[in-house]
Image: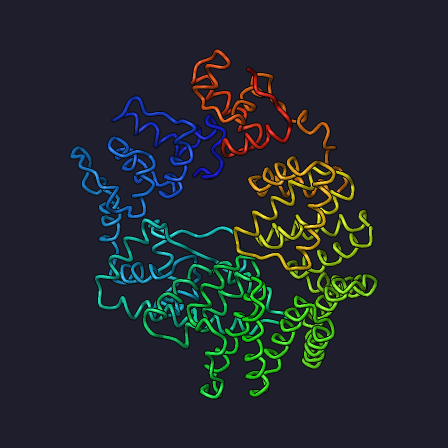
Length: 617
């Protein structure tokens, strides 16, 4: 299947087997149908939606006789209805995707058929242990029936984890299986078992936080995110409030560690009232449900802090701390103290912040949590940095960085590397800061944490500015701002002050108008391109601003086209100015976008403006 985002190379896309099949079958009913820059992304998305299934692609191609590619992609949300065929000269089982699946389904014995239907409750991948627990079969039965379904190509083995085999079902097959399950008497029971199973695992995930198993559970949550979300939706609809608490907590922590704050807050908010004073600690019983309530209060407070809602964060965390101490729950109390320290730091209450962090550190030490102590050092290091004690900050952050590296905890390592890098940058030690910030940026990119990427781009924008690479600095500032907006990750006041200082330096060096233009160019820059630029800055190898445009191999004609795009002209108008056809102008623009790795005319225009290309008369 093609990568839906990789559509710049039309010839390469047309050579993809799925796309080639779609084009060939579409031309049988519509000879003029062709792959163009306008429909390339849509056709790639259609093939991805159809999961490369040849029969599904052939049936979809037939629909292009009456549907546009955009209409086809929209309607593919319901594959079974769209991919019906009225062709009579093929076997009945090939006339529609539903018939093809039904033919295979009808050949199954009753046991395999029942398991096939029950497997549709899984939204993502699953293991044999998951099947045994959710589908009400023994381990031996699960092994035998899964092997049978695998032999019949109704499920597939997932690549990757060599320690535990994982399987999944193509979405087309899952949709059919779900229809059969919904028509049976056991649909509700199957969904309830699925929700209960994942709620129990979610509770185990929350219990691992602060312990050595935390990292493994976070990776598990990433692989099982879709099932956790499906289980939460079921519990909310079925009134299973206690189970919903554990599921929302696990999802909240997952989204927090991946910088996706607005989604995390929305999921946690589904199980909590909007106001912190709506919680009544006295009404809670001293049982597991009370612990689950405390856990969700903590992650809600953490997300509120990360989104800049300090009042709500303090209220939620204070209640969570009170409940934890009342129940003798030292682990959750330490988490509440740590983030109350962050809230106080954000409000400039330095002594209060230090007290909270030291309370958290003492609790972690008493519990023997090396990981918790390392986080406390990291937190105290950031506090020292923001308070201006750069020497103490560097010492504390080096210690936490060493601990996290020894624990082999990449995401935590990235936080300490970023904190130490920004501290050294404040001290003017740019050659030492660069490699640390590059290390943090690579880790954040590997674990898909957009907020972490954004804060590294901001830190390296300052490094670029200090080295007089002002254009690179401006682009990084813009790229970071766009990334933060995308995931609702508000920039803390201390970081915002640093970025504002960089922007003032850019305005002085480049002039306010050019600085704003370059920042805008950064805002529409692809994340990978911004990351590459930041890594070049970190290594000291960023190209000088004076001759950056010469490094892009555009022909003189392509430069004219880019300049005319920046002037706001259409392809037809560009053709008239240059004395070429509209189609030729379109081809030139396609080459420009490919060479610049641009996804829109706006990105081409921004590049042309920032490199001072002049449009021909």
